Image (cartoon, rainbow, N blue to C red; front, side, top):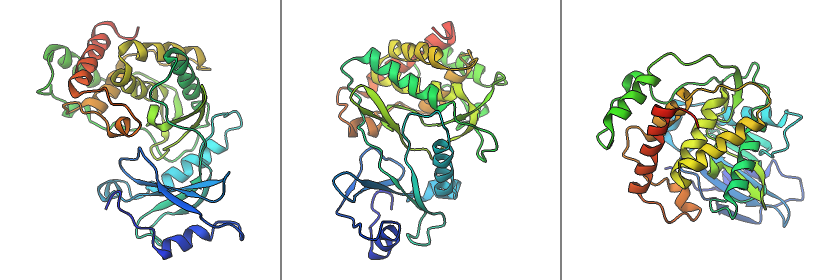
Length: 309
């Protein structure tokens, strides 16, 4: 059912009850980049639009039936941060149980901007990306219900068949099987990467897709973004992003490659690496599976043998 949700009259009535009395939906378009839910942009006027997110992935819902409430609470927490200049969607209404849809959904404001995966000035783009993440990490994590957990248990990891440097891979796996370093609990996005960041000109205008936000180590957000940057642009871009993040972070930060390694295996295991659909949706055409595998292996060697740059 994922990606094929029909906006029936019953569903549209649920949406329209949240609109001002004189407002009407003018156009409905499906937004690109969503691989686990369906996103609709609902145009209200030339200057106003809403986004409807339908959690129609049945497997995901079985694992986490509270997806709609989770994202709604994440966005409310972000909106309550007085120092946050990066825009996040504003929650309008939530169907937590799927009463209107037959599946959970949220209605939220549309954040202006566009996904930019081909920056004219990569260094400036990386700097702004790092600034936005450091700012998000200022959101208050206290008493937030959801807490960080690893996607893959380290005990389950084995050297994958596609690894060209199995001894290096084995060392990385041994590291992530160890106890994690101590960290200060932070409010983290948990899926911060370039497809979830919107731009206007050379500035970040917003960050979307908050369904995984939780309390946890800031470094896992950094590591997740870094492994995406490795695939898109190479190891040097990921290192530059880390350098900029450190310069913007307003507190002591966990300087340990452990978290980069955890993020690496969360992303690349069991593989083999593929070209992420979201990159293709936003115009990235030059990547191949072989190129991504080579960049990831170069990155793993850096993490295992040299740690952070």
